[in-house]
Amino acid sequence: MDVAHFLFGIFGNASALFLFLAPVITFKRIIKNRSTEKFSGIPYVMTLLNCLLSAWYGLPFVSPHNILVSTVNGTGSFIEIIYVLIFIVLAPRKEKAKILGLFTFVLSVFSAVVFVSLFALHGNSRKLFCGFAAAIFSIIMYGSPLSIMVC
Image (tube, rainbow, N blue to C red; front, side):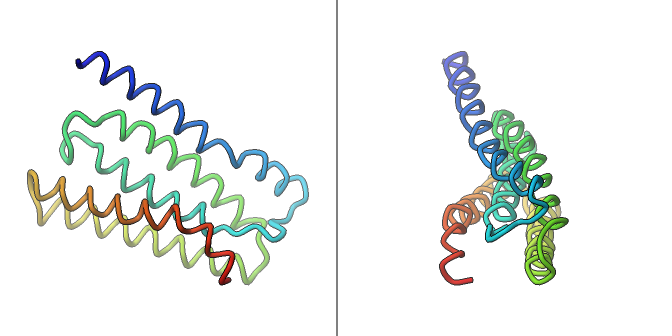
């Protein structure tokens, strides 16, 4: 059973990696045109938060036997940071300020989750808290593309 669990985890990681790399074409266009045009940076920043929280959740001292969750989301965090930095560099001033503010919020939320889970919680409480945080912001991440309808 452990072998099947590991193999399906590898397949899941490969699928997730392709999802993280899907915006490469968009970012090639952004770099080529030296402009973010009408693209929104919100989904990339929210995906970064989801990846950071999920990578934290998968660490052995938070949630044992979930290292594949950490590896794919750690990789996703790295990819999303690159996207966010490109977006910040090439965005117009107003959009840049909005994304920098949201990026600061993301780092603050992640830091708060890490701090609380390390110093206030242990065992299953830590796992549950980190899992809920990851699940809540995962839902927000999938809803974030809808932000273009109100911004």
